[in-house]
Image 1 (cartoon, rainbow over the protein chains, first blue to last red):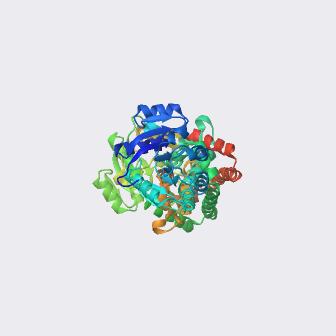
Image 2 (cartoon, rainbow over the protein chains, first blue to last red; image 1 turned 90 degrees about the vertical axis):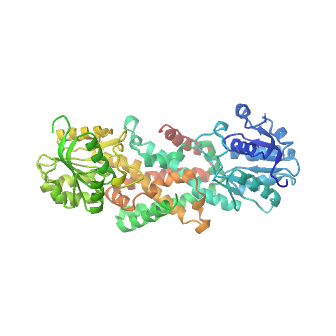
Length: 289
Length: 289
């Protein structure tokens, strides 16, 4: 796999928004010969074929990976272990396996334990998404300007890591290399816990009032912004919470301490200290965009 | 003050985004004769004059209200009591005083206690805002499609209430009449507590990592949506928290219970119950937009 970057045969398991978008980039930039889509949903594969996102499609993931030089795991993260158990021994020695899962630490160790030595696994996580899902929403600009985290371990092949870096750089993403356990701490803080917080907020407010008198009818743009992520997939977030539970619970604790402190200042009528706490938050937030 | 709706002399105290936008609507719809702006900031008044939002401006609020048929309090909510103490006896008998403050219950009772009997006070709260502040951001479309809550009490003059209803209806807002104490409960739930939660979230996450390694650099669109309201004015939210503290603390408690429940389910690895909780939130949120 020398320069220029080219994979004669690519297999994408899970041709949804992310897998489909990467396929589109690889086609547009001539980085791939034949792209095969694989996964459980025949409907999704047929749609991807119709849209020209993949060249071939099949529900037998083991057969789909046999010829591949690059295998991309882009199915729901809960499916990674069973899929790798199924396909591991069918992947060509020397081929690269990479993924786009939003949990890394323990998951990376588990997958490494399941793979035969010849398969070169490079764990990855592109920070991209949009409100729409599925291959119909896939676009070759999805990763442009986004970050893509790669989380190699001591077992990761250095040249395969460089190749996967080049692949993500070609999508327009900026690549960051990070320890897999640190990744899970960071994303518990900036993504996983905030999703739990948004779900919890919705449930706390939704039960107030009822029908036409529901409190929610008085919510403004701020509340809608705040809870937008509460519309996310319950299944996906259940899985993430189970796979990164320890870090998420730690972050909920940290968040609750911050909330407790503000609550106490409100109860005490401590105007100045409350303003200082709000100002600290407001200054950081204003610096963010 | 019979139909058609017309106020020969209007005084707006605090010509910022809200006060300025209402002035613009009244000019565009020919609802006002002379509009006088009043407030502490000479700069803001000069800007409002230059922009043609007001016809006259003055820093002496007492003098500014003497001729007014309608007085609008649109300054920061903490200034309401001192201002009403100052202007109350200068307002013409029969004139209408209304406000746009985001707390009502105790504040309404306090203002009623300060006013002479001849002044007809109609408490109000338009649910409108935008990221920009100040009179330069004022627009006559700000209230279109928004809700405006009016919170009359047993002491509110029924005809003055109808007049203020008509005024807000003319802005394109839909008017809702609500008990002032219920208003404060509702807005603690859908606005005040979520702002505290966003401030607390920012503080909890901002302290993690440092400099170029700050966790925040990995935040995506979801986190930015979630914390957008944490960029709000610390002074304003300090005031709201002090004026509606009891309700806000109750809502923080309720929110923390909802968060605790999810935390326990994560710790227990209770997949199904966690998914149910997330699904409940996700279903309500998806139904909202």
